[in-house]
Amino acid sequence: MVFTTGNGTIDGYIHYELTGGHCPYHQVFLVDDGEDKVFFGGDVAPQISQMRSRFVAKYDYDGKRSMELRQEFMERGKQEGWTFLFYHDTKEPFAKF
Image (cartoon, rainbow, N blue to C red):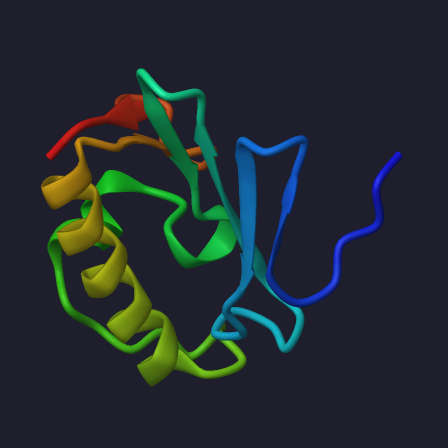
């Protein structure tokens, strides 16, 4: 078990980042094995529809920050070829942009 705080890397290929946004200690994860990159944004990026539209959600700790993070992650993901995992999306549980 690895307890994560802040930003860092586990075993050289699992990168995590403290984002805030949804809750004060929310983290996202990028798994990069050198060939594929898989991004898990948790409650900042739980559904593909939320990635495609700009809105501030009242259920987020910092809704404006969450909205900005979704856009930032989508742009980074497009540039770097990420596969996004959406754990709240039953129709599209993963996608590339």
